[in-house]
Length: 323
Image (cartoon, rainbow, N blue to C red):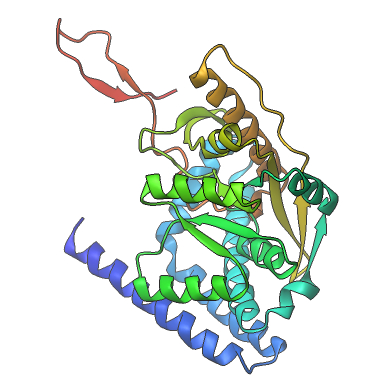
């Protein structure tokens, strides 16, 4: 990484940090109409400053939809996607200052499914994606008294992470950090055995070698197997959760019926079959609401490694699979 890019990222993180802390200080006392106005200004500004992220989103949309969508449609999705991400941040900062915001701006569909799953006493593997205002979804469920833990990747800014961790704790949300991996697995299993709802997002590139490759929009994508493994080890049902934006600042949580696990001919095939089932459901929601997903992530970055057919005898050379 060049010094220019390194310092640029440091600057961006510093701006994000001070913006977050400034907004949090102002939002404590500001009326919501004022928050909306300030938020709109910064969302427009941020959209103009995130050109590199636009490029990644455009590439991701082209991989996913190919010729299904016109260039004009893709640009509309990009604009709406970034707008939704911006409003999600504004809403979360405001909700952390005014927790009752979640109570009045979120509704849940399928609550009985969640309650029935928890009644089994083995916890719930809440499989989800970076879709809609998913932090607000967990925030709302915590406000409703559900024992919620969430697997998250810590931000690179330690001060921001400390602030977010404190705010999650204040509303009863428990944080399980994705790294180190062995601690993540241990803490997740412990939470499930305590009959908690453990949120596990599996829609991002998982190219560290411990995941599996499944089809996502027709392309191979490295995917985490955590939900299947956790369910196998604790008998906790895998319950999919999604949140949809309705109107300018209201949201609907959708709780889907539990995923029924299937057995393959061996453990590896079992992981692939069931991870594919979960991924296929996530794809269905993204196809239905493409503006709700975070396209600025390189989902297909990691690819299977295959041996070249024309290698000299005894010499192995691996190249990314282009399928």
